[in-house]
Length: 171
Image 1 (tube, helix red, strand yellow):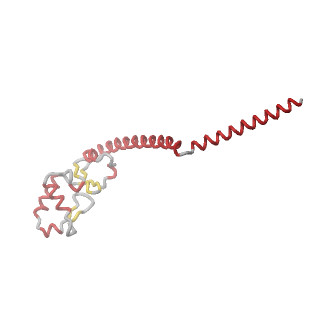
Image 2 (image 1 turned 90 degrees about the vertical axis):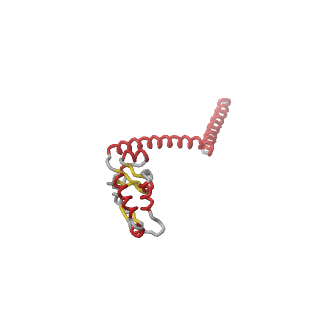
């Protein structure tokens, strides 16, 4: 009987020791996973998944914008902001000819809206935005008119700026 009691004590001590060692190993493993080196791979995988998701979303947006642009009608003038314009290339050329025929004093006070909701004027002594636009139009460079260009269709604008939502073009 004495031997059985002694064995029970030893078995109890061994079981408690194994449990304590198991707990310590779990704590050590958890602490190891909390180090920056261990988290780096998790962070890297997260960034890669996020980047992949963003690329997919961007590609879907480009397709959606192209479909929207194909359905929209009108001309687009990009001057810092993108505007729908009622003007055609011929209207721009006519305006440029009339503007260039003005005297210097009349050019200083000139203003126009180019068929958009925004009016542009030569209202400062040191800048003449209309002169720059007239020179560009006279040279036949409609891709840089207003800084961003004139586009005869929304589809042409979308080809130049595929990441711009056509719904954001100001009317």
